Image 1 (cartoon, rainbow, N blue to C red):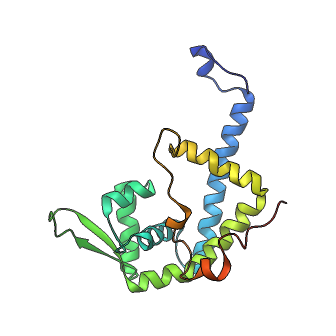
Image 2: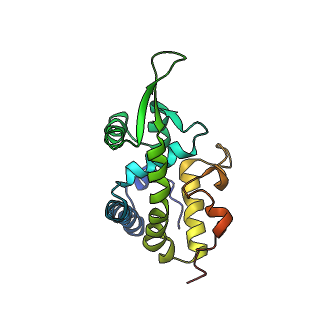
Length: 188
């Protein structure tokens, strides 16, 4: 891609840049909608509800302060509050006042929520694999990961990305039984 130096040129995307940008927007919207529909159909959870359960399952005490959870998931406080309320009504999470300062609120994963997460995880993995991973070669998928680590500012001058071992979006024993890459399709 050609380098663009003057300010007026930077204010307009080239045709190729515009096509790439619009493909990204439409593709991301379509992918997230498809993943959401798959999760609702297979598990009765919206994708953002699954995200909350996943994040809480990864926390050492299965609880995270609401403000940190919103930041980590890149959700507005209002959106997270609505999502947590729905999960609370289903018995999957509970809100607990922070004893240390009396002001903060934690969101805590219940045993029922952990069971729902573990039951839903394979469905989420299948959906992601079918809708995204298998649409490209392994090399392309790894490049997608590298691109998004740049967007997130992970590595280089920014914070280190989390280790894949920090992600617990798999049922207990999955890594041991299946290995982390067993279901990864070879080059297409």
